[in-house]
Image 1 (cartoon, protein in one colour):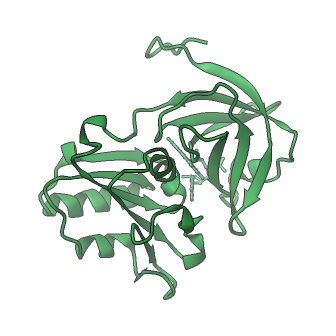
Image 2 (cartoon, rainbow, N blue to C red; image 1 turned 90 degrees about the horizontal axis):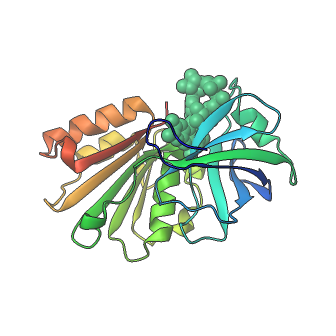
Amino acid sequence: MIDLKSGIQIDTKYYKVENLRNLTENTFVLTLPKSRFKYTAGQHISLAIKGDYQSREYSIYSAENGDNLEILVKEVAGGYFSPKLKHLKKGEFVEVHGPFGKFGVDEKNLNSHKHIFIASGTGIAPFHSMVKSYPGLDYQVIHGVRFANEAYEKDDYQPNRLVVCASRDENADFNGRLTEYLKTIEFSKNTCFYICGNSDMIFDSMEILKEKGFDRENVNVEVYF
Ligand SMILES: Cc1cc2nc3c(=O)[nH]c(=O)nc-3n(C[C@H](O)[C@H](O)[C@H](O)COP(=O)(O)OP(=O)(O)OC[C@H]3O[C@@H](n4cnc5c(N)ncnc54)[C@H](O)[C@@H]3O)c2cc1C
């Protein structure tokens, strides 16, 4: 299939569900076979369930060179699609389109800059892929969640490179919203920022970074909702 906007060839394939790994009561990792699917860390796919007419976008969670294609999903209460994903069984089919998007580490900053990854909830998914894909990356993840157990698979990040900010839990690195934490941090000039998650958090974070002297060209964003 050809994407009419970009003229780029896009793969459309049916994939058999290999596994569904529950991380919390309502968040899980869906594992699909990778076969020949190629992507850059930070990109997303469009996913449908075979036989269903709706689709949704999901950031790729797995590393570029990983054995599987994985996504990290939060089941949204009352949502149309994510509860259906949660109930998929091993061996059932989903339809994958993509990969899409330009959200990803800028190659020219790879070795010269510190990378600050700011995420709310499942917005950490593209950063998980980036960290796993570029082992030498100088990064810090700032993850905003409500409860400390929503720091999904935190051992996948190098020690001291993940700060979990929990707004309703005192058992995290920072007790409060990630934007409150962000206000307390000084950043060097050679820093580039990546923000992913809900639009209110992204807007507030960008305002804080602007006050710290970082304008739009230092900041990359991916809006989920
Ligand atoms: C580029 C892109 C990448 C995305 N990547 C991911 C991802 O990696 N993981 C993931 O879980 N979601 C991701 N999303 C969101 C995802 O596409 C769906 O919107 C989400 O799964 C809800 O779909 P639904 O059909 O269950 O809810 P819907 O019936 O479509 O909507 C119900 C309500 O839920 C809100 N909503 C959407 N996402 C969330 C959320 N995470 N938390 C709380 N409320 C939400 C919507 O604004 C809407 O008001 C991404 C979205 C985009 C645009």
